[in-house]
Image 1 (cartoon, rainbow, N blue to C red):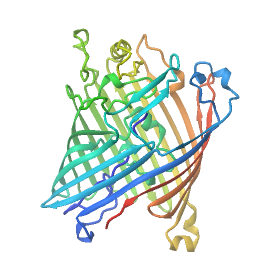
Image 2: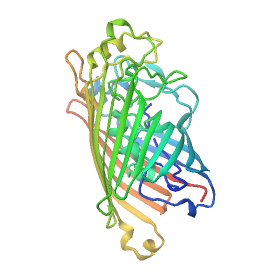
Image 3: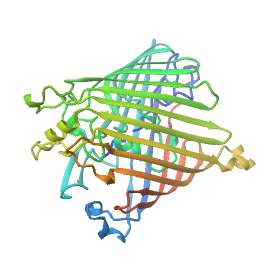
Image 4: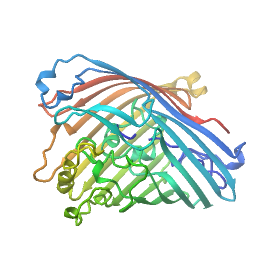
Length: 429
C-alpha cells in the first residue's frame, strides 16, 4: 500500500496558525481564540476502472485487452490533527491518519512473478501516527522542530492536502516512486523570511529491504518493527522562493545510506552503502483565476544490483517485498485549472469556485536498471486526466475526473472515471 500524506501544523506564538508547511496563508496567534488547535482532512472516492484487475494483465496483456470494467470505493486518507501552544515559543503538534478506512495491514495480489497473495504490513501498529513533534520558535526565521515530522521532498509531500491538487487521488508519479506522505522521526531546522522559506532535516536512513520494482523506494520510510532502524542516517532539505506575486518555486533534495538499515545483513554486503540521492524542482502559480502546478523528480540508488540480490534471498516470512529494484526512477507532472465561476458575479461574491482542469504526468520506477536486473516495461507510464473541482466553500471540494494511463505498445492502456469529495480545515479558531 502506497504511503500517501497530508499534514497540518500549528505555527503558533509569534509564528502563526496554519496548515503545516503550506507557507502561504498565515494567521497570527493574536487572531486565534484558543491556544488549542483542532482540525483534520479526509477524502472519499469512487472509481470505475475500464481495464482488468487481474495480476496477469502485464505478463499476458493480450489476454486482457477486452476485459470487463471494475469499480472501487475508497477512503484514501482520514486525518485528525491536534496542536497546542504552551507559550514562550513552545508548540506541540500531532496527526493521526487512517488510510483506506482501516489499519496499515492488507492483503494484495502481486502483479509480478506468480501473482500470489501477500499480506502487507507497512508499519507496526494499527494506525499511522504521521506527526508528533515539539517545536521551539525563536523567530519567524528560526524554528527547531523535534519528533516525528514530514520530509518535504517533492511537491506532493510538501503540499498534499486534498485542496492542493486537482485529481481525485494524489498525483500518481510522486506517490509511486517516493514515500508519500513521507514522515520520519528526526530534527528539523526551518524558517521564513520575506521571500524565502528554508528547511533542513536530520533523519534515519531508508530501509533497502523495503525497496521494490513498482514503487522504487516508495515503501521504505515505514518500519514493520516496533522501532525504526537507524544504523545509517540521512539529510533532507527544501528551499522555496515567493518573490513573484502568485508564484512559488521550490527545490528539495535528500541523501542517505540505506543498505545497512536491516536486522539481517551479513558480512558479504558490509562494504555496500546503498546511497539514495533525490533531487526535485516544483512550482505553484495562483493568479488571474488560474492555478498551475508542476514538478520534476529524479532519484538514484547505488548498489541496486546487490540490494536486489540480497532482498530476493530473504526468507519467505520476511516483510521484504523480495523484488528487483532499479538504479534510477523519475516522475514529472503538470496540471492547470481555470476558475469558471470567476465570470459569474453571484458565485464570485459567494466565493464559490469551479475549476476546469487538465493534468499530464510521466513516471517510471525502473527508469534505469543495472545489468542482470529485468526491466519491467509496464513500470513506465504516462497518465492524462481532465475534470472539474467544485468548491462550495473554501474547505470543501467535490471532484470529478476522467483519466487514462498510457503504456508501451505491448500493454493495454488503463482508462478510468473517478468521483471524490474531500475537506481540509481547522475546527477551532
